[in-house]
Length: 344
Image (cartoon, rainbow, N blue to C red):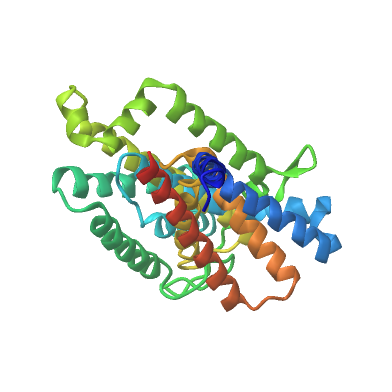
């Protein structure tokens, strides 16, 4: 290499070094959103029905339960916890609401109230196990998952709760499922299913609570460094308890929407939503390079998964292939999230 060529090569190397971090930063920040946009463009090209208003209304309605359950997971992760009982809590809400109306002749409002109360009770037990007994979050909530699933099956005795079902004493259930309860998902407001409005309202309120209130910011502080928060005078136990109560409430709300959708009390109905909820919450870590649990990221994660499921179903992709693809997306999102943390 001649002396005249050496400065040009050094300039090229320096330019490459300058551009590489910038490109990496763009990828880490916008990668998930780029994947979502690219997927929407691809599906709209290969399946013309994908971008129709009807399909997107159904898509967003379908993701409402998943989003509420994912937000429940997100709240627990904010305080460095991990609630894997959310699917079981949603399933319990389905059973409680249907039993209240079909067996005990409760009104729709009473059924909703009892379902949400069941979520708060389970969240309180989780908090007691984690905060007072100091059990690891994952183990405590995993144990609660099995307990709640078992209680559901005891309640229904292997049956699906429907009007006219045979009760253990041999009589028939004479209650009915209230139309006002079914309207929670099947009713419409401004041409959109009410469940969509519930999902957006809850997401916006939770986003405001976590990002713009003192309590929300202290919850993030607890999750970021629990010991530092304690030394600063923060009641760590109280904030973790509040997080698990809120997690139980949100999961139960997701169960109420699910019950209004399926219209029967099916045992373990909420279990499939646990993995999807966890995946959506974890994908949210990588959205906009946040590197932490956040409401907007969780919503984008749920939307990405809903778009994948909807699009692949329209393309007749086998369900087992869909699961593999969803898992791959979650792993890629986690890799992006940890890359963000290590880069910071």
